[in-house]
Image 1: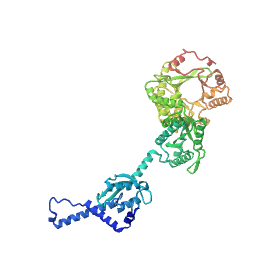
Image 2: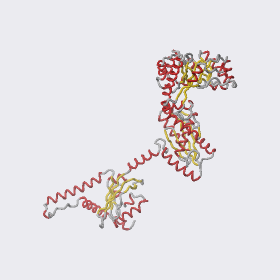
Image 3: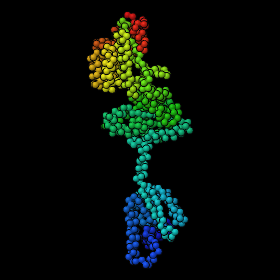
Image 4: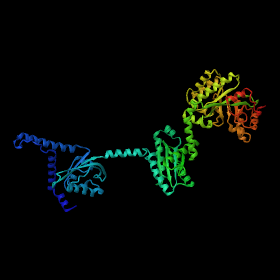
Length: 622
């Protein structure tokens, strides 16, 4: 502080003079005498002069009142030495100083941060000496507490080009706007619950990380994490407990995170992690174990310990992708495959997984079109008597032969149809086509062979599925001995009471209901006495090794025995050689079905077979 500054600061008469100059300046600016249009002012009446004077004073008072009443607008006045001569209530609210505390203080000592001090002094001098205006701008000025305050500051000069110029600062508080802007920026870049970067932010950060890996020749592992059965946790314990799990998992992931690692929450129960500098197989296995270890300790939910697992999908840079988006997508593909294998599974991305996904997407999109274009057909595989070789029944099996390209396996398109919902339309078509074909065969005199169709659990989700089956039989004039249905045991276990009632009604009407792939589902024998079934089809996996594996043989023999004791017909699937047939005959199995006898055939070949134009298989002779 110069000697002159110190003298002014101590001189109360000088401060009073500055305040008088300020009041005079306000009066001059706000209430300059209007022109008199040539009338000599000395001739104006005294009353008119007094009226004008009152108007000027009222105008000044209104102006002062306006300055004091603006809650978010701070107005300060400074003399040529930048000392405070005016400080309104808005300035006190904004900067924390009372008018008494601020009076006579230097601008740069009150509200100017240290890094701005020299610039403010130079700008003020340039305005006074050279007439260079200080432009309006967003600034961060200093509160009494030392914290920075965001304002929009505008400046004006009174008594410019005189010995007593006065500078006024009009500052608008931007704190609320800045806070809202920060909140909005956070919401667009980070997850509200865990405060982790969201997917968009993660992708940007990861692309920068990949560029660094590229320059340094480093690898990177991307891990896609999906909490197993998270929906069940929300449903059973409530969303607040689900949130607690996510917050605790985030804490654990952060604890084991290196400075260079990235973590993001990309959806409700899914996280993505990036580990740079990982390339060799031992390093990859190490980081995977690192993430798995996060779940070793139970989580405390609703006051109880709960063991939580997660499926992981892993994609590596540069082998599985060059960009963040590609690596995240491929890790997601691997994670989805891991989920098919069960809780806590880990899968590494392979190109064939992506190729399969692309193909499945294509096939799902083609299913409806294929139905419209008549690309589906039914093939029929005979079920023959193990005792005498006579063809008893025919199982209808759907086939897809696209207009272009090779046939597509049911093992591939049936699950797609179930996931997409097309299974309902496809199932209706199978029922209609089987009924139509049976009517045609009955007209040709083939009266003894029943057609069995497969019904998936997904079809039974529709309440009227079995009623639709009955309506089709009635519409085609067919009875219980003409068409039967096959269900897997899992479908029966999971069926609700409405479905079971419909099945009981069909059973009482005499319609054959078989359990397909018996032994591969829940394998609970107790349900056989409760559910309305008439036949068991032993899965081919037991038939295949029964001749050489004593346990498979025992299971097969036990299933045949139990089926017969319950009055059920027993069918063996997947019979492929004479040794298997001989074994089944010894066990008194009722019917056999498999490639050793007949492959599935189109309806025209069945016509020839049933008409005696094709000789029976020699292995069927008793």
